[in-house]
Amino acid sequence: QAAPMINPATGKPAVVEDLYPVFCQELAQQEMDNETRYFDIPEEVRDIYKIYRPAPLCRAYNLEKALDTPAKIYYKFEGNNTSGSHKLNSVAQAYYAKKEGLKGVTTETGAGQWGTALSEACSYFGLDLQVYMVKVSYNQKPFRKDIMKTFGAQVFASPSDRTEAGRKILAEDPDNSGSLGCAISEAVEVAVTNEGYRYVLGSVLNQVLLHQSIIGLESKIAMEQLDEYPDIVIGCAGGGSNLGGLIAPFMCDKLRGEKPDTRFVAVEPASCPSLTRGRFAYDFADTGQTCPLAKMYTLGNGFQPSPDHAGGLRYHGMSPIVSKLKHDGYLEAVAVKQTDVFAAAVEFARLETILPAPESAHAIFQAMEEARRCAETGEAKTILFGLTGTGYFDMKAYDAFNRGEMADHEPTDEELAAGFATIPHIEGLQ
Image (cartoon, rainbow, N blue to C red; front, side, top):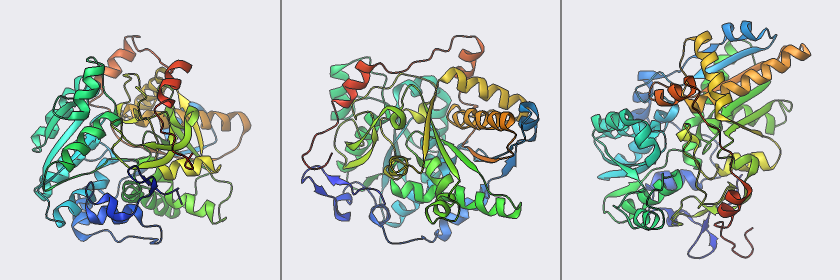
């Protein structure tokens, strides 16, 4: 169980009513619930799931052969839907907003997968949607916003001049390329200042990891049918949604002592290394410092990530649940340079015929590393990783890699210090 969220106005643990101005009531209740073991999936959500679920569990035979490894490599492929990623699994958020009688919702998006998925869900349930898309991704991935608009969403580059939070950031830095923390601030501000709207988040929160647990539940059932169980479970990590969803049922086995030796590995970009170089502390989820404080691994709510190509992983913090697992030693974390990530992505694409999203390629890289270790030791381990989506909207990134023009960036000690300086120091919390 993760540490409780803190209401910044009172400095005390947040209660569910504190979240009602921001989130749908039922989602707020899911967020704060520490007792319920399972939540039933509403029939209306199941109807959408039926379109593209169950997602396939595949074995990477060609990759295994190329690596000459005794390991078995499985991947759960979440790209078989229009959003091209696992993000559509949290369609439940639109359902609960409609059930509550809301007019619409607001959200942020990094690379655009979540914005695309939510635009589909809102179109399905007849809701308005405003999306604040991190500016660098807005420019890098123009067709993402066209898909969102096709489904009826309004899309704005963040930071924008539409909100006080955006205007403040632009006043300080007119060329600011944006961050998920900044986009969250804008989306929350619009939601709380417009009657009939609420905010929904695409990652980080407990409720989102709950919705994404469909990934792990399906994976476990499929592996049982194959008489398999993973020795290593790997996922890319930005805010923690796909990782948390994939590992959930397997982590339960580990925590209960049934599978104590299973390893879990989070793979994050070296350019935004919250788990590997961040601090485990209470921090704001957004740059504007309006959301409740969560205890998580963080680089500081003011940390400005470099404009790399894995936009979905460009977030200053990490899911409180994932952070707690890492802090308590149940989860490992590694940070990977994007040139290494894209080299793995290209090799995987050529062998397995799926062009992976840059985010997903972080997990591919680590799965290949683990398989190479098995080749050296002769251990026939079973590896499961999350292939969270496709990379067909990321061709500028692939083009940069193929041209040899892709650069790596790791934050300097000075950049980290600037980010850490924005972590609030509230007596008794840190």
